[in-house]
Length: 299
Image (cartoon, rainbow, N blue to C red):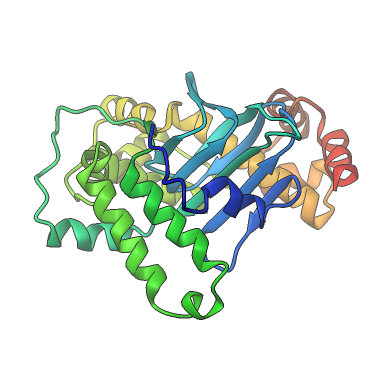
């Protein structure tokens, strides 16, 4: 694991100065979020978007389908698509809270940089996962330190430094152990790129009827090949992914729009309110109305 220089401001200090209480903290830099938890948490469903996540202090467990990723302080992770996961903080205390950050990545910058770097073509035989975990290295750490320092420098934040640092991060990612996955994402020929295109379509069309064979045609694959690559990227079947998308959207609708469970079930694509309630309870641990009441009381 990379250890920062003694005379530099550490990443945990920079994050703690902004994330002063438990929760997710948006920042003035688009796509950059900070996290703090003073206690361990129960597994909770959420959506991980395409980007880079770093654990600065504490431990975390992420479940993607049947795959479990245990992350510790000093590790970073990459997601190759928008993925519904179960995650929980497994090590945290008021004295040493869990601290982390998330940075969205721009696929257009990655594609352009891959061309400029004349990166080697991806290895078709290499199997890629939706989530990959690595130990932190000096280059990524130093670049992220400079990103966090921008939050304390108003003039620098208004300059063009952030796009330059973001480009540096992409170059380091393309040059490192995750480079092959990034090249697959920006290659029109790759299975990963085809599956992410289908995932993007599903996120915008999850309320209607979805036929697996139609999704396979969209990806220009046979149904069996499509299912294989879909599970490789997302850790679950297409129908499981669709169900998680619907349930996460339903939770947000009830929480933000004060809808009842029956109306919400129809809005997200369920024909049966009872089936919706059963699957919601199985996923979130409580029936819809009780879960939403608990979330509102916790705010």
